[in-house]
Amino acid sequence: MIDQSLNSLGAKVVLASSSDDTHCPENIIDGNPETFWMSTGMYPQEFVVALAQPSTIAAVTLESYNVKTLKIERNTSDKASHFEPVTIKEFEHTEGHLQSNTIALKGASCTHLRFIISSGYDHFVSVHRVTVES
Image (tube, rainbow, N blue to C red):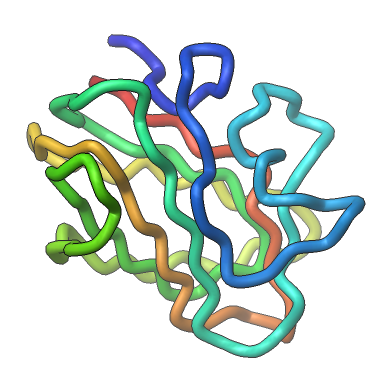
């Protein structure tokens, strides 16, 4: 399996609903476990990852903090304009440590993945890493 999300392989965060100079959206895919993206409050929050090339996705792993409900959508065109729902997951609250959730996508083909955080366990959430396995 290949991690298609790392920016070293050409993937990019092309949209994020909030941004902070210290905790920017690009931190989600930089491969550094010490960096992260932090929301600026309010829900929903979202970000879109453009893969380096069209891929068939087996699973997505999200390492986060305070995320309660996550919706994943996919796009199959070169433009990130039309997304189709893939799954909705509710995460357990893990007070004091990161949530790590692997979500099987059963071979969904896509060029972009949109992650929508519908709710959280607090006003702010953080996403430390997203990995996409094909």
